[in-house]
Image (cartoon, rainbow, N blue to C red; front, side):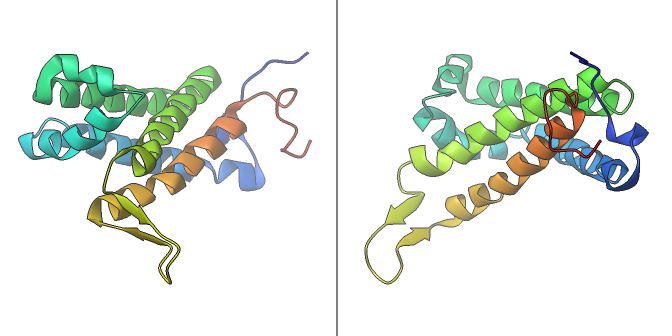
Amino acid sequence: MNLSFNIAEQGEGSYRALAILRWVMVVIFVSFGMQKFTLQSAQGIAQFISNSPFISWLSVFGLRGEAYVLGVAEFGIAALLVAGAFSPLLSAIGSLMGVFTFAVTWSFFFTTPGVVKWSLSTDPMAWNLAGEFLFKDIVLLCVCLVLLLASLPRSIVRLRAK
């Protein structure tokens, strides 16, 4: 079984174009990480963290501390994605961490009270500004998933043409 990981920067054709996604995600993770070091961001994410079954434990660090932990994690993911342009394994690890990050933030859409109002009316799913803010994370999750699949060995993922 061949377990050699891949990176888009060394690929060919449409595979090589996926490198653009890596650098977009680096910019996104750096900007998201920087925001976590502001009081406004810490206050803004507190409602999501406190209601999350996955990361509510971060509250042990306090309001600013939980934001700092997330900011450092986002900087770490950005660093792994940068290193992933040169190391296929780091590309896969950074992409996987990105998938987990956006899976957790996408879950806020369902775990944070008041974000979505479900009904059987003419507007079956209405969300507030927080819901609109979170809805984009499904796209970012998919971008990280594409980067992950592109990084994995062909023997694991048969989606790429030989």
